[in-house]
Length: 383
Picture 1 (cartoon, rainbow, N blue to C red):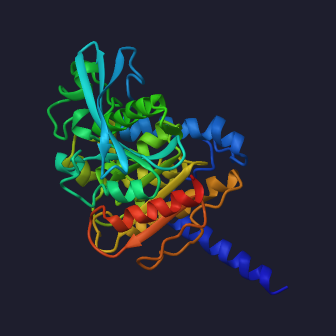
Picture 2: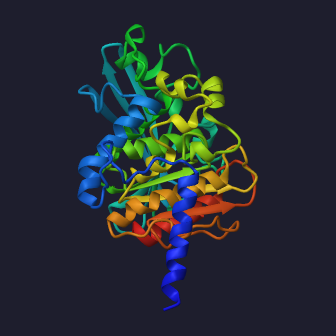
């Protein structure tokens, strides 16, 4: 008899706190109807939220898979002391504005049953972090450790899709598939272009018989983490999405976020998002969506969010709270979300539900500890 009031009190407190944050409700349709089933989510609310994010934040891609797209395996050779096969693949595509390509580096384990699940990395750092010879053993992409765990792993350099600077959208895939002079306020920005590129790499992974394209985890750090989340929202083929310290317009709730805010990110990176997003500079509370609803768009697939204790710019509290607020959508599918309502201590990962989370001691970076947590989570749910 004493247990029930305590549970109700906790539930009431949580609801009040969510209300105090002035968050939009992912389980309330545009016409204010409650969403109570997974079917209503997939058929009604999910499409609504996608449109709101396209219109107001990331922009609208003018094309999905191009008709003119080809793959070429330029190298296939033993690597990593015989523990893997290394492939270098070129994906070519063309459109009204010309031709483009993206280079993919892929390592596939020699041992273990095939087809292999795969971790795909959006590499937004120096090309040396994708060194195919692995002479440079960067922790940003610990290939040997991933292979040892039984996963294939691939990476592509986001600048192949669109360079990370603002020149009026006259370069990269914007030049090929979009006319800069005719751009609308909801036209896609660079984050959406990189997400589009991740889907084109997944197109190739589906064609590789050594890989199980139904078990591909897309991993991104910082701006790459923002990209991974938007790619997962747009493309439901990704089985697992990993956002590492993605912060503003990534995993962190904009309305409560400290550090980088919408006005700052639009000022410093005017090419990342659509023009409409600038209307919300300093007006986070007026956004019709927030980032917990982006996380909810991953449901019922696997989602992992990670933060660093010294990364105040990304704001771990706002990133974690986003996983809490997205969890009710997973419950529609009878799945547990993040499994906690309080930010965990560093190095105490939360992996009981289909939303994983950890806080790592240290600064803004992608390290082997983070990868170990991602793979532990994948071992539990994706293998």
